Length: 315
Image (tube, rainbow, N blue to C red):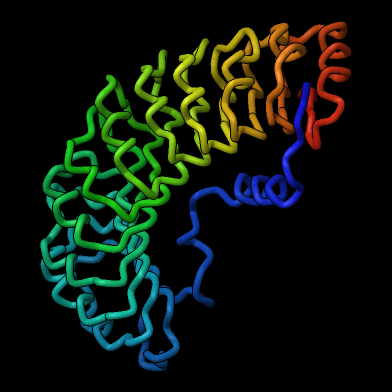
C-alpha cells in the first residue's frame, strides 16, 4: 500500500532530477571566448578559453575583477603554475573547469581561490588524487566533477572534503567496499553519480551513505541490490536504468524516504508481491523499455494507481 509524500517534495524531486549536475554551465550571464581591446573587464563574468591550443595563459585575465567562471579545458600545454599565479587575483572566481588537461598534480596555489565552489577535473586520469584532495580540502567546494578518470579506489583523504554536496564519479571503474566507507564520511553529500562504472554488484557498505538524497547507479551491470540500502534513510530519488534487473528490487519498499525510482531499460518482467503487502513512500516509478507483459502491467497500474508518475512506455 502507498503513503504519498507532500506535493512540494515531489515537485522538488522532479526539478532536481531534470537539472542534472552541470550547474557550472548555466551561471553568470554571457560567456566570453577571448579578451579583446574592446572588452570591458568589469563586464566579463564567464570566460571560456577551452580548446584554444594555448601555450601561454593571457595575462589580461588578471584584470577581470568580476570573473566568476573560467574554463581552460583541453589546453594541455599550459603551465598550471603560471595559470594560477594569474588567476589567484580573481577573488570572485567560483567555478573552474580544467577537463582534459593531462595534469598529474594540482598547484598548491589553487588554495588561494577562497570562493571556489565548483570544480571540474574530467578526463585527467594521471592526477595524484591523494595530493589533489589535500589541496582541495582547504576550499569551500560543493560540486566536484571527476568523470572519466579511471578511478578504481579513492584515497582515504577524500573524507577531508567536508563541504562537498554533489560528487560526480561517472565513467570510472570503482570497485571494492572502502570507496563507500569513505564516501559515507562526507557529511553534506547530497547527490552522488556512480553511473557508467561497470559495477556488477554494490557492496553492503553502500548502506552507510545515509546522507545522500539523489543516487545515480544507472548504466552499470547490476541485477540486484543489497538489503543494506534500507539504511539509506534520506535518499529521495534513485536512477537505476540501463542495468540487468529482472524484477523491481524489493528493497525499495524498505527505504523510508524514497519516493521516485527510474528503472527504465532493464530486463524487468514482474513486480514482487511485497509491493502489494507493505507500506512505503514510493510515489513515482519509471519502468520504460522493460519486457513487462500486458497482464503484469495491468496489475502494476492497479497496484500503483496512487502514484503521481507511473510510466511503461516502449520505444
